[in-house]
Length: 165
Image (cartoon, rainbow, N blue to C red; front, side, top):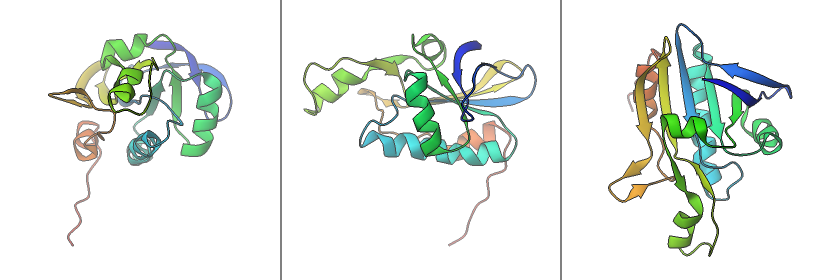
């Protein structure tokens, strides 16, 4: 997809397009600076830094504003981030959920409404989706789940080093 509300860590607003050939990883996360959930978002993006280091573009996607994403980029490192303010990209690839209702059900908040991307990772090759993981189980969306990095790396064509302990 062509995305016009993108933010690059260098501070430039720019359009971001998926490469027409080769692979890329789209990393969807519910919200930057979201308290305890930050650990999950940051961990997800840190895991994917190894994919980027192997030469596969990684694009972090959230509903957050470009200003929030600028601070998030400074906190999490050199990835490309996209502000999906209307959730259109998220709906196309991983769907959305009401984070507010999720938090309300946990007793963390009351009356908060915030529809945002499901946590997910999508690997695209030559413009086609070849792998999708969405953070959910039989109960519904689970923003606390982390993507299986070994599966994502394999789908992205990045070798996974197994360590013996």
